[in-house]
Image (cartoon, rainbow, N blue to C red):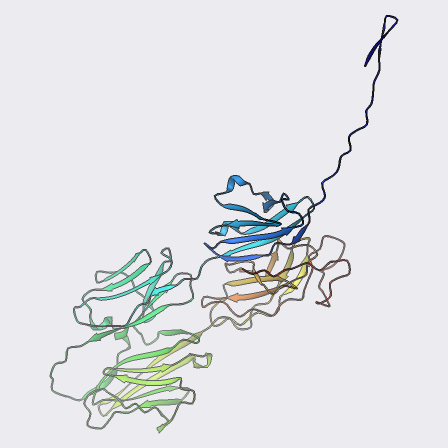
Length: 468
């Protein structure tokens, strides 16, 4: 303000009181976000509930704010006091920690995305074909990007002038032109990266011709079916062990299977028989027996003797000898059988140290590797008061010490581990002792001696189970 007094200008400064400023009340998060695990391509929703309708909620992924410009990927929905983040058709890139923030608090949850399991739309089927005909094995799986390998009697099939291997979309096909007797056998398709296979048998149908019977010494033709005398047959525990041995001989020979100096025999139907069909009686040391658990079967067709064990077990591993005899002579062959399985579960892992949001865990290899080298390990963790285990890695981890991150300080966790070999994944280990991630305080590893009682300076997390 300016005043004129006696020709002199005077300046006066007036100070007015400030208008009162009232701070906005804090918006609290009443219901927290929940951790999510989803299959690739599924829809995921993160939902929280706040204390005020119309409140502003900011969403972040791994500390980066999600904006409405990314609406092609994320949708933000409000329903009263509920705020929902929607992610359509999740991929592996969507894995991470998602946070809902208000001016009065925040809530964080983790999203893990897993690849879908491979479905079989059409399996391969047994074939019976005549000479010169074409044999076609065909299967269809759910993922057109999955490659695979074909095997005959355990040996990989390679494409050549008569053998054609194709993969078009979801369909895998093996075609054999001008079928011959040596093409007969068991064929298997193994999808790459999956611990299962599809199997079928190719039977060669011979055209019978009249011939003058003559006496021939018995002969075992392991090489005719793709086998060799020094080959090893590998069978996965729980699967069928099938030893299919081509034999010849006239008159029909007696066939004896032996293992550990005890034999399982098949005798001709009668002394006058001139074909190679055998009686269905199962023999052991010359006496008819009944298999107690029904796992062992001996079956014969013309030109073949088949020894089968349903649900192979570790004790079935060893060298099996087949002996064929008739009045004209004797022949014998050995078949080495190896039974492989998933590894035994490791012992409970141990927590070496903890950090603010991490821990270092170690474990010992399984006592038995299943007969195949251990490729690595898969780890899981869960919050002590939760029932949901979260997988930390999907590819086998080759070391015996692992640093787990992205945990919440002050919350009790447990860890467990699986062993993986080429056959599959073991059962999980026992859970580790509960532990609490905590910042540097000059303390050693915080392992809870009383798992059901949290330290006095920590507050039990609030967990609410919601419907999917």
